[in-house]
Image (cartoon, rainbow, N blue to C red; front, side):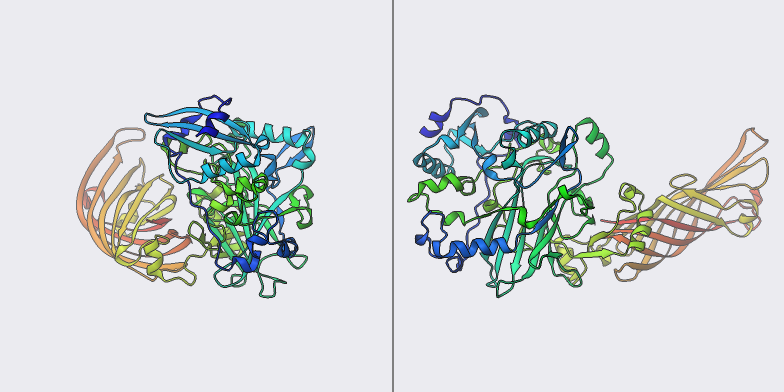
Length: 621
């Protein structure tokens, strides 16, 4: 506490609103090393620098991590301009942003924000750094005062973040800011393979969810002789792709350097207004992807993310040989007690500190949820540290590329998807591949089948045709419905039971005109094929049919109106074409039959018989 009191000289300002939904005394645990670490790093006591890397292993490890550095293809709009010159955001050396540590002091009772202090780390002596580290690693809260630790990026919103980034890229340290840096951390996995994690730090994330500080990474798994790439693990939005995966292989340049495509843009209805009004780019999640294209359900709330190829834009391609590669040790092997000077290089990796102001302005700030607006902790406090994919917070993405013609066709069938239309290639998460259906249902990754299935269907984002039959067809025209014009249909499915409701309007052929409305409420038994891309079904049932007859007495004059209810029956056959998990194009042909107004309105056989073609969507939940 004496260290914090002594440092409390500046930095007042009530920026502590985040404490209402982020507990300042909570942090994730650091991830330890494997039992085989000594065989990789050597004996810790053989490290002259105190970083746990034995001197007889250092040169070999530096050469090893240099040999497999990936090439990055950066996003299109993740840059700032000045006088026609573009400054692409690149992975940055952390020393450029870790000179000052911000501590927010929060009183525990009453629970209020008290003060902020800035600690200039470059001014502290090694012994003071040790005391600071010891305090940061304590897993015990003071009874009266809690402390939130973070490195603060200038500005409070995206437009200000970009202004600060431009100042740094064009300022006195512009050469250092223009040098791409990657932090390479090798480890040995449970199978005895050598895996190199390449960690990239970006000063901030300008995506649909914005936050200061952004750590992203990719794993390169080596062959047993450590001469080739055996696997590459890509991470994005709590998802992961492992390649090779069937026919999908990692893209490798110069024999040993994976090519990684950095995300990306998430289009939605607020995209352009946000870009214009808030001066945000909405492109730069910095997730690591194996291929350019549209990645379905990759981003938050199931949104796709657009990842772009290089298009001969040299500023967006960071070749492997351009990186400054920093061999990154195991934090828990660092002997900062014997070698306190080592903290001048590795303090930020050792302590549990956020890499940005705890929470950026966001909807999540008002609802108390993390929607991507919170700054991350460092790599060693990420659940993927020293672990391969998939992992605890990184579920597997079983990549499948949709053929171009099929992709374009499916785009037309999804009206809610028109912002993304005709963007190819398209990749989807093939969750059915190689998995037990019951396990997927238990995990909530696919909708329940059989009697547990729940679904809602309607042509209200599609079309419907209804053709009157028999004597009904002699007097009334075929009815065409588009969206909710001339029709309003919906059905609910509970297992093998289907409930249908709605109405269809039929125009009278003869002058002066009129209409017949038919609106059934029916229950049916549904028989469905097993889940697949195409899923046939059939139903039969019955219920109440309401009808309303309207006929004009004269052109433009009043109408005669009569209505009633009768029992009727219905049967249907159709097919569901699954555009994505739980969302299908539903094409069904349904027959309806009920009594109606009969001879009183000129329908000699007395019945309202008609066929209805339904082209809409079914959503399972």
